Length: 269
Image (cartoon, rainbow, N blue to C red):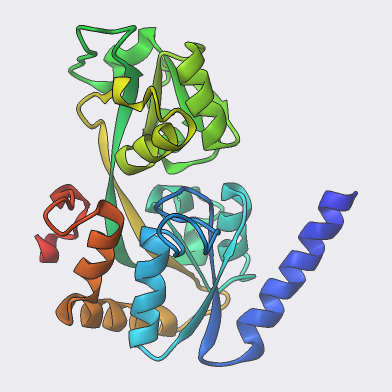
């Protein structure tokens, strides 16, 4: 009952905030540090890489953004139902038949490299595969409801072990309860360095199994004319041109030279 009440209060707040001012909107995301994170005092002092890029792009278009965080499925539903103007996530999250007609994809914010992390002490020869189905013999940790889980579910033979939080999958990998962790490279190393700093060097990645998009997706119910989707595209172009985009990328990767070029949109490579 408390959870239901909290959800009612939150959705009421989302609607109120979304319509309160023409130039201030609510954008929803889910926690996937350091891509999206709700702790403004985290190690990078922001809302995560994609979160910071979205806020900066809207700011360049004179739109004030409040980013609110929800569990994945509620985040998608909030955009679909018009409780929030826009959401941030992979387009695969918004592809189900009951959601896709209610949303419009604006622009790709960035890409993320999705890979399998493993403990080289267990697999000293590494883990190699040709196609995703070759991983059917491994217990694969995933975040429940995430784009990665959605992608891997398209290969029914895979043994997926879903967890509600990244910490859980990281600990399962460290304890040997899963064989590999399907994760974005930046995220996997961040968690291992944080939770197991003395062991982090033992973890390796396979070749990527997917290059996932992070896109801004807007609600057709809340923004039927796609006004905010258009303004976002204009703001994103502006921060790419003035250097802000690469500065934010470098902030999270450690330097501009360290940026994974696969994470950049085609027009920034």
